Image (cartoon, rainbow, N blue to C red):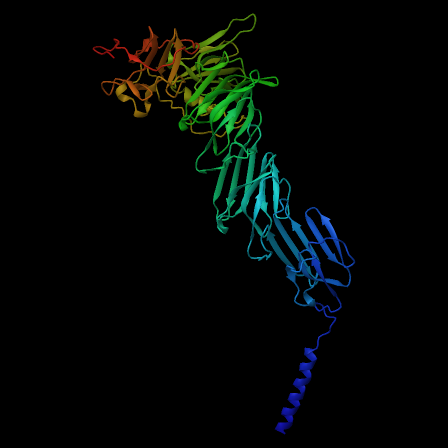
Length: 619
């Protein structure tokens, strides 16, 4: 009985094994009736076995009914040696479509081989290199051509003005950057990755066409998270050099003040009658120039090699019609100072930063901003400008109303406000450089009347919404009637006006200035005036001169720690260059009008010993 059961089991297993080993030859994946053909990419002529279609840089081969691609190669038809890119191992691996893609620069090729069962094989080739099958888990390294302006089968190209952004398609990364320079058709390799981690996933390319020659910048984003910045001063010159630039540093550039368009380096916009040029992040200004149409040359307006004197903002005045007459320029330096220049006889000279203010002229100028916020009117000087006189000019039949005229530098006005008090009254507020407030009140029944000193005036003005913190330096145009959040005021109401200069022994170290007489532009802490072929350097409160130098040569320094000077006069006597140094004396602050620059260049200076108002003291 046992033997009989074993026999039945063996017969059953034998029958089942035959049943499940059988496979229908018409099952999907087993195609026995296809005629195998060989695809030679070298030969593109049409035949009765497949169709060929050319679309841009792609060649598409599609088999006709009853045929299948059994292999793909590229070789001369008469050659004995045949090089195959791909071969099917059996009829189930035959392909029904092959797509050959070439790059715009002719150095890259890619093949897509589509099988009947829906799978796809991809092969890749660089010039003079063998074909390789692409690993879906490994990106292929390819070059990017900066001349390309449209998307390719290997990477995408987007444009934003003069900025081009290259991003690789799936399966690719950038390992080099090339550039074709016409008319010589010279191919240049600008950058090449040393290893896979240094390949790039994004490249930004900018050419500033407002400059001649064209300035170029490349920003390369690496796979390891790092960035590379390359710059060149002439993108179209065959022998140009791309320089690696430290990303932590700002690039100094020179700008044309007669340009009215934005660029990669700066924003260029109007604010009232002024043209404002703001440096973009990563850039600073180290020079200004403009195009001289009469002489067909570029004229240098200003230039510096000192990093602390670089600038991020420049004001140009004014705009007249369709032409820029840049008679006044203000340069804001990184150290907080500013330089004011005026066009004089085809040259540029520093100007005296003190003007009169007509409160009836409610427009911004190169000297100040006019801003109206919540019915409060602000006159804010730009840069180092101050108001030496405040008035309201009368109409044809009326005389001027003179509110204030400074007698010395302590009485200069740094900000002016007009504050409404209901519908019929308003304040005119003058904020002096000493932080003293001067108030005038006007009502329906009385003209402007000077108000007595009031230590609580500051609190009353703050409660009315006056913003003392609006900066002197111009910024993006503030919208009319804009509601600004109340900020901590920088105005200190408890600071009293100094009747005489601050005692020298109380001067803080940062308020002491080393005066270099070779620098003929007003810097932080002092002003420059010109009179009778003399240069007068006058310190502003609370600054004083700790020494006088000529380049590296020390001309004067105090004998004791508290003998600091507040004025230096530089002049030429019988061909000899001399200076006079003065200690503080409130009667010496005579404001003189600026004149043309002197016709001599300081080189050798004779120090003249003079008597001073300080007993038993001479310099």
